[in-house]
Length: 240
Image 1 (spheres, rainbow, N blue to C red):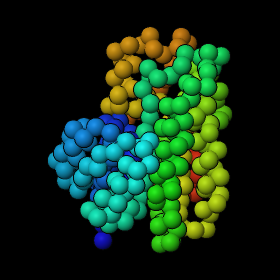
Image 2: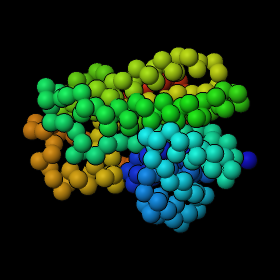
Image 3: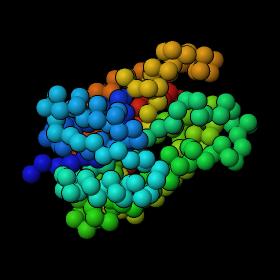
């Protein structure tokens, strides 16, 4: 029987890369994003490649919408075997420096990168634990080994997400449920961020050189994490 991966915060970069990789392995893909038209376009692109997919529009920071989306996915595809939380903020939402950071500036980053992962986990983990199998995959744009002050408000939220996921992984050890976090220190091919940086290179702080990686390669990284299940945290692209 085919398995299902649900991708929360689906985008043309990371979301599409992971969807294609898992889709090639026979997974059905649940596309979850805020904008119905974009979600449907992603589904059409996947179907054109022979991958079974369906759109489930939802704001991944809204608890009720996540609950409704998960319920609809289960009715459509059955249980969710793997979830990827790939939601990310816009570059325009990043505060220029850590010194300039104020408490209200954390609202959006914390909603996207801490509260939303918690909501997804609460919606899916109990069922996975009961079945004794499943995987919860997450994304980050920071590394504990490399301090990047320009990440500012998002850096703080990503550090909070990391703390939550490390605790979660330890608690779910020996339950059959894998928790994996990929720290991504590259511009993702075909992503909105790559397009914006190409159009406005001045948005990248002086002296910062960001490597690039295709979404296909990142899809492969997540597949390796899912199949190997030997590390909670994996990094790509960061240089000390």
